[in-house]
Image (cartoon, rainbow, N blue to C red; front, side):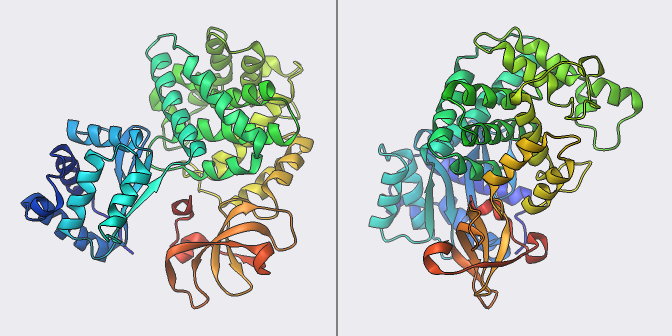
Length: 436
């Protein structure tokens, strides 16, 4: 499948936002509207080129396919607000979508006081199978809230202000409670590495992974939440570094690297002024690059005794960074990232913490693309150390190599299926993040 052109994505977003702004005007009237006819024709062309089209609200901005619109007109901002308010994680347009279908969607988005569930019911009652409404579960909602909280916090600090930490502390508590109930459930959240907000997604992912690991080690709620906050804020010191250095795609000069290495110190100093954030969090941020063998930075702190929180953040930072596309290094698949942190155990990373993390991720980490003994291709959805390789997977291709229109959840233990090999997502043309 091809990709949606930026101009087409922008036009589709504008048309839908305009239709929602006008309240849809009812399906019959709107089906004759030029804007809905144009939207249907555009969607039809894009569906032929790129397959199902997903529109979503991510980090406060509208997304169409792989395009993320950071500067949006008022109508698109309002559409994002409605998505968030109604708990809609995405709207997927499928082949055969008509102007009348799109008008019902717009009318539902403008109303549907019951949120995503009611909106899906409205479409179902109208017999519309060409539009899918995807709803946020509470855990995903907390994750998305964390993205927004961290983004706002970074912006305030970068501008020289002192942020209100109430939102940060609240979302950390929510995610920590979820981690204590089921640490593995948090792993799938970190497959979100989309668009151009790497620093925010990465910071939240490190915090979420750190909470999952801390909870799996039997730590109490307060410790789990604090460890997550340390992960959220581990790179906050980069707000004091020249942005051109932080986002530079090539190798840093010696002088630039020296400055970049100061971000743990800057981060610890910033955190010392944040209300409600403990000194232990600041200490963990200071030490997350000190290395297990004490050959890291800052050099002056190498002799300090850093606690387990810092070691946890170091492991989760390494894992998430290696599985994220960055200008200066290739993206690793989850199994490759596991091998990388295993290789660094005992030098860069605490061996005991690495082993606990590997226990959490299982034989095949969440997001691994695998081949089953039935020759089906699937994405690991819930990991396990069980001999079958995972607890649950999402099958995305049948045994003949045909992509499934709807991925199918499969329990390996119940079905008797087994993972036989890893598969390269790039060679298969599969974006595993679409399954999460």
